[in-house]
Amino acid sequence: MVSEVEIIRLKCRACKYSFRIYPEGVKDYSLRTKRLIFLGVILYSAGLSYQKCSGFLNGMLGQEIESFVTIWRDVQAIGENLRRSHVPISRSKRGDKVVVGLDGTYVKLKGKTQPVLVATNQEEGTLITVELGDEWREKELKAFFKEVIKLLGLRNISGLTSDDLDTYKEVSLKYRKPHQVCLAHVKKNLTKRLNKLAKLKRTVPKEYIERLANILDPPEKDNNQILKDLLKDPKLWKKGKANKHWVTYRNIVTDLLRNWDNYIAYLAHPEANLATTNNRTEQSIGRSKIRYKLTRGFKSKMGVLNFFYLTQHTGMHKFQEIAQLL
Image (cartoon, rainbow, N blue to C red; front, side, top):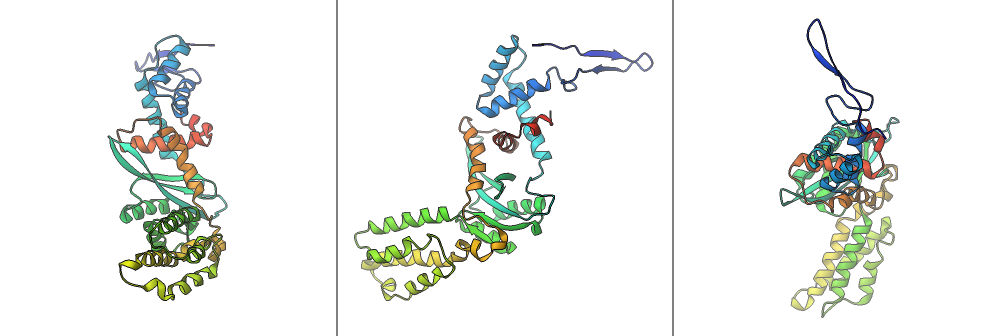
């Protein structure tokens, strides 16, 4: 193994300008090879801390050449280059429309909890863009979706998928796009609400609970008629403290009916090719969150964004794209 190569420095006799000739594989103005830089970045992405990356490389080379600060700078530089050069894979050359998956997550920024918004190609599970923002705040979410539109073009977005937060529904209504709410989220929340209702001292009869328990397995276009018929039942409108269980049940029915169009969007808009869950987006976020669990947070906004772009590429084994930026 070659541990050192020679950099030739020349000087022009006429103008006295000096310059260097670097051997193949060594970046200009660098004392390290591209492979060495690449290895440090990949080791960090794989889970090693900056100091452990430094210790490993120094031990491998047999001399002190890599400090943990140098590796940190390499990681930031590669992450920034990936972010700036990133073109969403979703922009197909064929002009195929894209289903955008939206979701949020959280990281630590300067010791405080920082919400992050992520947009993915729902079909491929690839990253479209990521930005700091709170999915619970409608204004921030709409501003984030505008950035998605800039990248893809509104005409190229066939629809949206997300969890069951109301803020996502406001975005789909504004841009008049079919919006499929993740049925896995809805079923999970519905089961929790029904179980909580069943534990009350005074609860609704079992047959009423069963009528809601199976209404989403799977949802049918005309299942909303079941909900409408339930609301006509006088028991659901009883007043007084003794009938709080019926009020709770009625709230569940009205919530399901109010959002029914978002539950069956994949049936009502087959041309949009909507998925019934938001699993692909959550899997994409998971590529970054798995690595994030081994960190202690970030010191800057750019550090957060660079981290997400880097871990998304390494998580999908896109090492060639990283190597080309060295």
